Image (tube, rainbow, N blue to C red):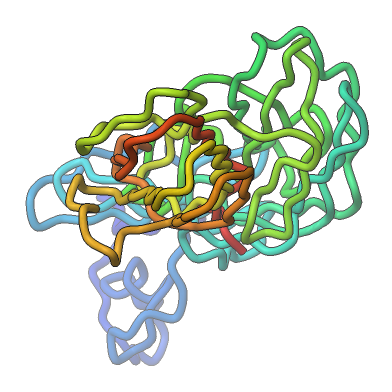
Length: 322
């Protein structure tokens, strides 16, 4: 019977009666044993996420992708976490990502390798390499963020769920990853001067421009006091970046270039380049930017020449690195 409550026309009978049905305990025994312990919990599908007050939490089922899935909601109307996907436990930890490496194919195409990633608390899979074509018409020399959508059903990501977006991502404390709306950002690319995709390489830890660089500075009158310099990095907080300093000086003098992330780079420890003879010199270096993607620089120099600072790449931040 679907309604296990004692009906008005039934007798109230307890356990172990020799001839009559136990009606008093019938409702409890549907999902408990005789000691009152749960044997299972059958949860009716909810039409919406339930409200939760302070000191409360809810474990419930709701339809997702045409299936009844298990969800959890924290106290005070907190974050909703989907615990199963396609009937299987979604075991992905926040920010989980393995594989899913982007690779440049052409100025209008890239591939995304197989792997798995968490999106909004649910684990999804890219079973095979995805190729995205028609990737052109972007604003020139712009950072593009590789985002992945959670599919409406199932747990497999296809090409339709992958896109590039110039919108600045936001860090999610709940999921420990970068998001644009509800889409997980898992990588970065850059457009070239024609609005196509600039060639790059990425190993899951480092992003590097392959055939070009970002000119953070090109001047014949470099600053001699601490001056903010925008590196041109993507808007992903503090990043460890690397590049090259090109010095061209005409005098037989000492030429120091200092650079740091906080404006206190005026010691020998902050020097990224030093030359004391005429000529052209290239010095590689790496350092951390500040939260706005800037550094500070100045030179010790009294002659004539020029200075260029190039950015070639950066370390992917938490939530993207794998």
